[in-house]
Image (cartoon, rainbow, N blue to C red; front, top):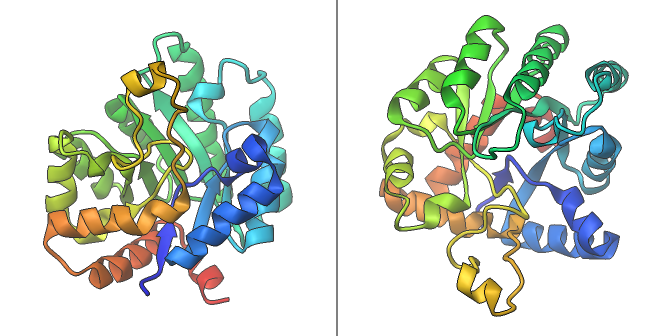
Length: 278
């Protein structure tokens, strides 16, 4: 069986949704499918402890940060509190990045200047603690890149990348890998599928963003939801099937993709290498 790294998975959401036993089942199913490791990004102060605890419990890794979607309810002192947590846990080998941080211009109610302040402040933390970053770049690639030019960090991952070829090349030139997940499985995602097929292999990592961004085989349409069907919930165990789609788009063996994306994940998040050797 091929082994995979899910570079972006919100395992704590499964625990919050249905309890620890449900989470343990989800993680065990992923392990049986060949997902050897998950990276668990935080999204706000309220789940910093959860992602750290679950990473240790399940042999995974975690990132600490404040997501742009949560900046509206974050306090002005939350970045200082985050800095304290990073200081406390910086020597923890399972802490692999600062994240999930970035910008989101898809949600119209978000305060743009406020999320930009949080983004810049967290880039400064990445510089201070010499950690890579896991970036949220929904409809914001150019401004995220601008922040990185002003406050260079040691690379990381542009999660759920869905920008242009030129934006992809700009992230790659700055030492970032690009995360591909469930969205690439949709036939209508023409530009994204073209990027997955044509970008240099060394620039790709795989992710699920579970329980979000379900692949096409899990997707529940608006009509189905209106008829009473529950929304789809993605899971890390879907990663191998997502990988098969990417391998098919590239015309390459799945085993080669597994090996390459593992190496790419370790390049993006250098602390992973030692963890995977345990």
